Length: 161
Image (tube, rainbow, N blue to C red):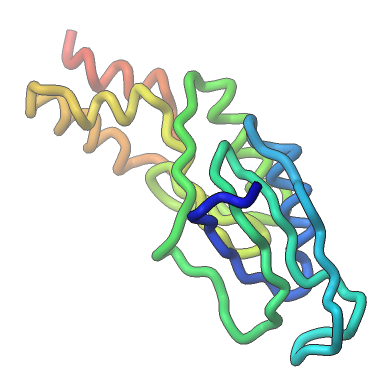
């Protein structure tokens, strides 16, 4: 059964490869139906993969092989909450090591141009700390990072010794 709300992501012919990568990388992810074009279309021919249904971390998506007209931007991203440094490293390294690129403050981009926020829960909890001094220390520590360093965030949250 198809979800009432599905994120549609535009790809230039490689939606199936992206869906397979996401399914292999993120927990609670899978590839569903692959639909082939019933006729020729501007970016492909009859029989080419047109759409791929998949789930990323529990979020239903469809990849549309719509061609090169539209590109992904940082205006849309997946935010993945991680439980520890090992999970943060695994996901970050999977994305960056598969043709992606690092950015700042826990952000990276995959080889298809989709942005990801790999956000350890300790970071998110630090931002929400009721003590504004704690939230500020956590924020300032994050601002110096690319991939989030959980130990450094925990130290910032504790404050000076």
